Structure formats: C-alpha cells, structure tokens
Amino acid sequence: PSGFEISHYDITHQLVEEFMLKANEVIATELKNRDVGLIYRVHEPPSPETMMEFKNFCVRLGVLVPQEFGPKELSQIFLAHKESAFISELSSRYIRSMRLATYSTDRVGHHGLMLENYTHFTSPIRRYVDIIIHRLIFNEEYTQEELDEIAKSSSEKERHSARAEMSYLMLKKIRYFERKHKKEPEKVYKATVTRVKPYGIVFEVKDFGVEGFLHISKLGNDYFEFHPKKEKITGSKSNRIFEIGHQFQVQIESVNLLFQEIFWKMGT
Image (tube, rainbow, N blue to C red):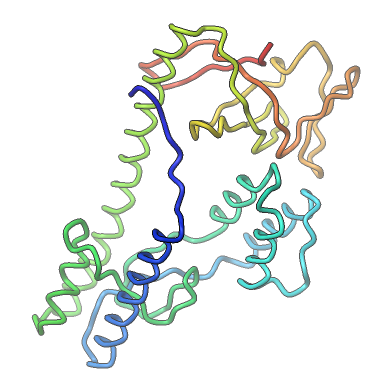
C-alpha cells in the first residue's frame, strides 16, 4: 500500500443507512406478524457490571455522568465531548462494554438500535442470513431446527470473517510502515494515549488507525509512578504526565513483518 485514508461518513451515508435500517425493521415486523419463524439480528443490553465500569471510566476522565444513564444521556455525553482529545478512547470503551450482536431465532430485540424487531435483509449478496430472509418472504419453509442452526453458524462465521479482515488490514499497515521506515527512519508521528497500564502506555497513531505500546522504561530518563484510580503515569523528576487523551510524538524503532509488530520509541 502507498498510503491510508480515514473514511468519513457524511449525511448521504447516514441517509442510506437510515433507509437500510428501516427496511430491515419493516421486514422483521412483517414476518413476525405473519407468525413465520425467522432469524433476528439481536443485541442484548450490556451487563450492569460493564456499564458501571464505563461510568467509572467517564468519571476518571472528568466527564459528568448523570444519575440516570440511558441512550439519551449517552448521546449527550458524546456530543458534549466530540472535540476532546479522549473522545476516541471514550467511544472505544463504550463499544467494548457492549455485548456482540448475533443472529437468533429468539426475539430479544436490538439494544444498540433500540428496536424490538430487527433482521438482516438488505445485503443478500454478502450475507447468507439475508438470503434466508428473502426466501421466507416468498413463503419458503424452514424448520425451527434449521433456522437455529443457520443462526448459530452465521454468528460464528461472522466473527471469523471480522478477525480475518482485521488481520488483513493489520498486515497491510505493517507492510506500509516497514517501507516507510526504510525511506524515512527518523519520521515522527503524532500519537494519543488511549490506555495506561502499570508497566507502560498504549497509544494510537490516529492518522493511520494503528495502536502501539511503549514500555515505561522508554518514556524517558525518569522514575515514573502509576496512579490506578486516575489511570495515569507521572514522572517524579520531570512531573511529566501520561494520561488518556495526552498527545505526544513517537518514532518507529523497528518493524517485524514476520510477527506483524511495530516497535516504537519516544519522538525526538
């Protein structure tokens, strides 16, 4: 690859997506009203424990969290902090607190979309469940056992496909950075801290969507102390602070294509 570009969804993309969501909802409702067994796209609510962890994370960032914490309040939080340095990690933490959406013959609803009836209908050229839904519309019959098996198999294959896609994209990024490092070994990249561990920091090079790690020993000639409650690291001599949202510069130390790893160092 010769470069990377961040895709931005504008109003036209959102409009098409809204039509697709509505079509999926209408078809699911129609088949349910026919009393036909079907495969739903379901998304269960997060557990109280994971939501409490997310709320605590918000508090550590200094985000004001209301007592009532529903979809409306979440939207307000993200809107209020959309320009903040930590918005990327705030979004990632929220997504990680969610359960995975799956396929099921049980009508348990879609928490993320706040819909009771939802299926996948609009992309039969790339999803097998959509083909099944098209067949059901035209009265093709399936047993409950067949639908259960298709739902289970499709959920598993979706996860495998997602992992394969992520691995492929990561390989392309590694190859790009390997070539880039050979041409410009001293190039400096902008990084943003996304997580803080007792032994180092995890960061993101946002322009490329690449995550990296710096061990605490590479943060500088200082004694660094980890503060778990505030999720930050501070230097005892320099008073330098590494916390979520903190922006700094990094450079590539080396690239291992075989193990698909990029080793980083502090930028100079």
